[in-house]
Figure 1: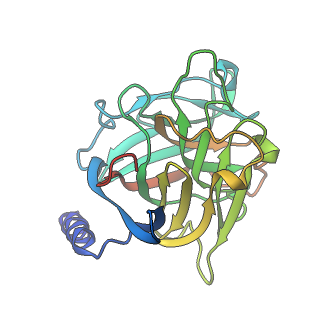
Figure 2 (figure 1 turned 120 degrees about the horizontal axis):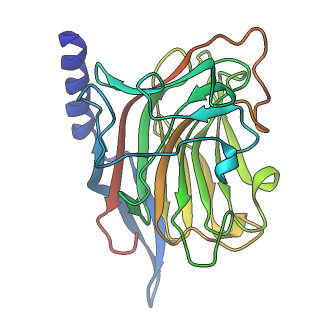
Length: 283
């Protein structure tokens, strides 16, 4: 365990010394010509390295408890809890575990963590290093949901899926946005596929860089998708505060139900979550 923690600390130091990978060039107009302004997301405003065993840090994370009958969900089968059997910090990692068990009328349990009311921001670089589970009907995600706006509900509040994954497709993740006129099956999305590798056999970094008129999607610092106001068929609603969600669903309209070959329990391992703000105002 000591070697693992020492290695993890070393990786963090190395990451801090790397060149600025999270950089985006945008064009800024001036009176005589167009020149490039570099927007860098360098100011760390949230970091959870999951270094303290036990329950997740209560200063950062809340829980959704229950099922989709509470007003959220996509015909999923799990009951979300805050029990240590479903969510726990151990040996430097956050473990979100889906289990096959009868609980409160559901056939499965899992957990859904969110920063609502504790950490909400507009724009920045959001990233997490995660090892994903696998299997038919397994649906982990790392995403952002728009904070409550008086009189507005989903999808008007906006949703940014930094990483969404079907357990039956262990080489593919998706980056997606939902908004008015482009939600659910009409969302704006793109796939990223690993070559000669799988997302359930090791850790990968999933992230976005989000500014006033763009959302860039990354896997391991590879830019694979950019979405701008011109790419959505409705209103651009990504200009207000959003909060972070980490969850592991079972079943639902996106992945289908587990089958006889789906192994339980399944665990989503999170090494860290970080958010950086820009050093330029309004970016």
